[in-house]
Length: 242
Length: 262
Image (tube, rainbow over all chains, first blue to last red; front, side, top):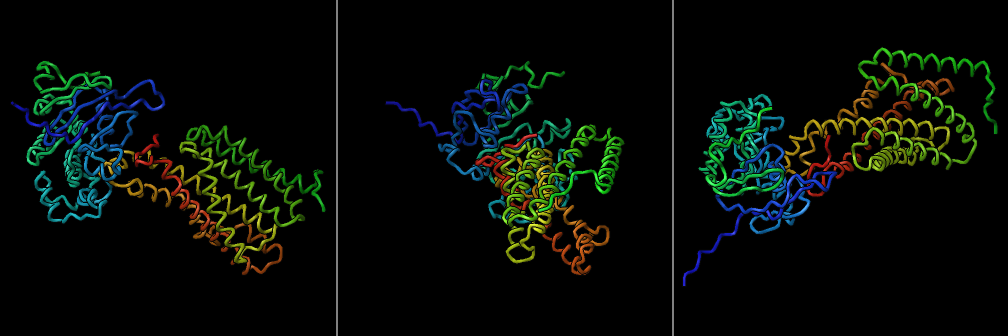
């Protein structure tokens, strides 16, 4: 008798995740979104502005609370985990770097320092070299350009060694040249470190490189499948210009 | 018991005229600054009128209470606490449950320091001293707390991104908030700190002048003025400290989510 190989348990799973609009329980930012994310998998999240992409990531990272539904991390309801421990396991890189006052080194070491874990200066210098910022350790973080700041924000998120990395349009605020180089950097680090990630993107190129693509529209999941199934070649993912 | 006469004595007429000139000066300045702060021009006449009526009523009440039992001073200070909390509530309406926040903070700061000073005998438990000194302490802590909450709200709304970035990296609400709370704390204590620094150089406060006029030694009056100003600083700082603890759970959910928005 032939038996199918066991399906591995997803590292992360959203089950009927909903978030009502604050102050208006009849309207939803996100409604009944369910999908699994497997270890090492990369899912690109696409959809127009206001589709609920950032809300979804915030609910997974628990910066926001779902109205109903649940997020499971390695089979465990994230509501049973201390929020600080959860956020170390699920890293989030935002649209803007939001670097803290102080040096680049201080910013990168921030997450581990919250767990009283110290990262050596040599290790930070190696990471900075790897992202094309050699000798930046002692620079004032507030003086960096947008592209440099996002590279530091990426290292800061990775310093916690998260099991899942959430990327919320990390290149949205960058110019074309920086956007391309930061996206290439992120893609390389994901590949090298075999990171499991959810990447909100407007870039057709980036979405096409994902294992699966999830489309959100008006807070609802309207498509989930391989890039070939979800993305139409002629379809632009960019926002309509006003 | 003697009550002040309400007849318009020459002294009273002079006082009313002085009040009118002082109020006019405030109105004129607000008129000149109407473009920078348009709301204040409407607010200031009512604030002046309200302040004048309040202080006249307090003067009349004090004239009665000075001859009553000592416990009545507690009633007066209690009423002042409630009024101070009510004023701060209006300035801190962006925070959840602002009245309780303001009342607890001022009561803890001003109340504890005043009790400490009364119990150690630094402030004599006499109505004529407790009420004016207590009112100065409560009024100053009220201002400090209002400044603290106003600045804190500004810091949070201006730095929502940094706070959430810190939370997303696994920082506790306390840690994510610490730098912004410290900035508000420092800024709100500047007036109280300046009062100590400028004491005697830029500013000779009324209590010292009053003591000298009533026959106390100028040196003792100076020392006692330091006691009062230092007490005000301690009460203000303690109020901010307590308020900063209380405000944490009004700004963050139990799951360390930033709930206060612009």
